[in-house]
Image 1 (cartoon, rainbow, N blue to C red):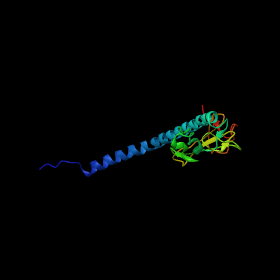
Image 2: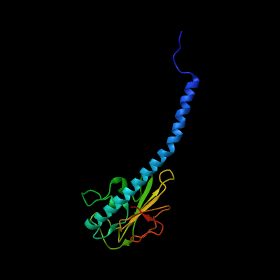
Image 3: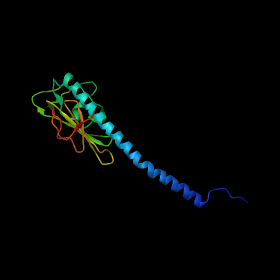
Image 4: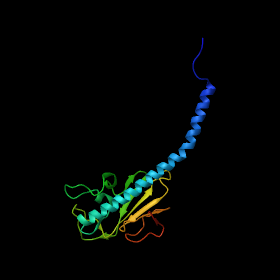
Length: 169
């Protein structure tokens, strides 16, 4: 009687080959994931800059929104200025990055969506949540330039170039 199947040695060899391939592929997959997360953070900062420009022209009377949740609220009955994944809270966690927004407060003004938390300029930043979600920090401000750095750009000004950042081309 002939038995069909694999021997234990053959199965161990196959498992060893699969483990070696997985060990080689894992760092590349992590780098690809980090690159994707960083690209998402950059795109989020661009979306915030565009939303702030639209908000300032159409709703803020030349002023900017003071936080992301304000951009997430549109004028009565209209669409918000940013999508829900960015404008649902003052700080958004998206693709492994914590994204936030601030600015120099302006007083005595109201916007078309009812907010009175307006600013004369803005700066937004995206910081990685962990070392496995991203290695670069990003920031943008009223100038619409996006900078990258090795540490947080959350303390940058509304209009000046940050001392620690380099612009992304």
